[in-house]
Image (cartoon, rainbow, N blue to C red; front, side, top):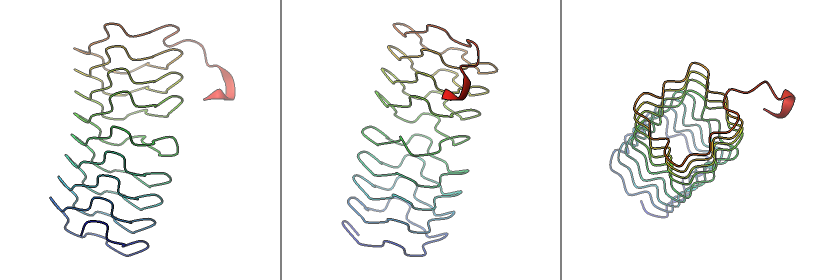
Length: 178
């Protein structure tokens, strides 16, 4: 199904485990509760797709477009999210454990209560991010930018913060800039 055009299609609950969907056009598709475990979604267009409750664990999402995608309750554990534009994606509460977010731009993102346990966030930009209540146990934050982040209630046990820029962590509320 490489390069398939499934834009706007109702694929709710579809079984795509291990499927080759690289370059697929899934714009505004209903993928609610779809099984996309281990799927190859390399450069797929998932913008505006409803991925509520979808299982994307260990999916290859490199270079995919997720702009405006709905990920409430989605499982992206172990997913490769390098080179994915996450600016307009709500990741609050998403399971991103063991995912690859190396050098990701997560600046200003609300990642509260998100599972980032063992995630690769090496060199990631997390400036002004809300990480309250986030599970960052064993996460690789080596060289990450953590300027003016909120970390109250976050679990950082075993996290690698070597080389991280950690100025103003848990500083005051900076107003409506969040």
